[in-house]
Image (cartoon, rainbow, N blue to C red):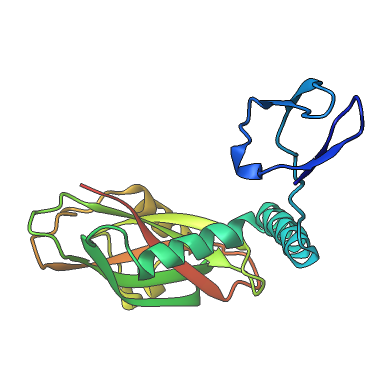
Length: 209
């Protein structure tokens, strides 16, 4: 690097490797003037391409955050689906043979979800509690209902009942909700007077003991 004496203007070539952050005292051999020489501050230039990528990344993160706020239910559903497909821990229970259908009975309509719960663990489970959701064509949750292992009504029985009898069924508890290791137990979840336009349903395990 080239340095210049502040007193007489004489210029010298100086080895930059001798510089230290706290500065180095130097002396002009011509006039005897001394001063402290500091390392030059170099501005690190940001390449336009990198700046553009950073800006696009910030915009993308903002859009993802906005999507999450506006579509909270859908984001939660996607997260639940991902956890079900790629569980972080060993799965203890499994849902089998899920079937959902709408049917007319005396006094109104019901939406019925049937299936089985299988105990995959090596211990006896006292019960498995479930939550079912009805979705409209856009994937929005329109109704929720709860179920439990062992609480089951076959199709033929439901067809013979009216809404009042089914309400009593919903308020009752199963005679035995427990599952032995490897055992499969049926369940039925009912939506009384379900909303119009629902076509899809979801069922997930909310607790097991």
